[in-house]
Image (tube, rainbow, N blue to C red; front, side, top):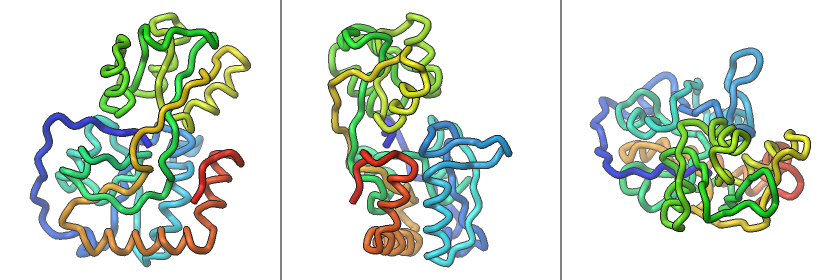
Length: 240
């Protein structure tokens, strides 16, 4: 559900569609639990790893996972360094102008504020990960935006007093608050942003998109996608 704000982007010409390859390369950040993270064995893990593997199985695709920094993940998709983005990326009109999206595999959900106290000033200094729709929202809200390259740094900015609060996906912030032992609290206000989370693909890869869409549709229909969402995000998570 993170949303990259693109100011300039050009679609790169790539030699051959993903389906012409033996392996479909799944690009993720590996730093946004529970969507995606690197486990103790050094492997990509999380909700999107489990879901992506199942989608590839249903689509009869041979997939492998690669990691990429968030701020260059769309350009590297366009350049052909991998074939699919599966990295908690929200579907937005702005992104849809430069890449294509599958149907969503997470419903539109909320962004939220995390702070040291429940009365923190949401109009003060707010930390957000650079290049996200949350950062854009903060900038337009009149608050002072403090941007960081990684989500971990945004939370650290609140802990060390650089920022009054961090604004990010609620699904990311809930476990952060729970693991803080009461040090950090979620604020009451939530904001709905984006059109849910989907796979990002090159505009030219229409056959690959169709295969993933069919697999997502099947998982929605048989209930396995909702089961997976609840497993990773809890019983209160939005489902289909």
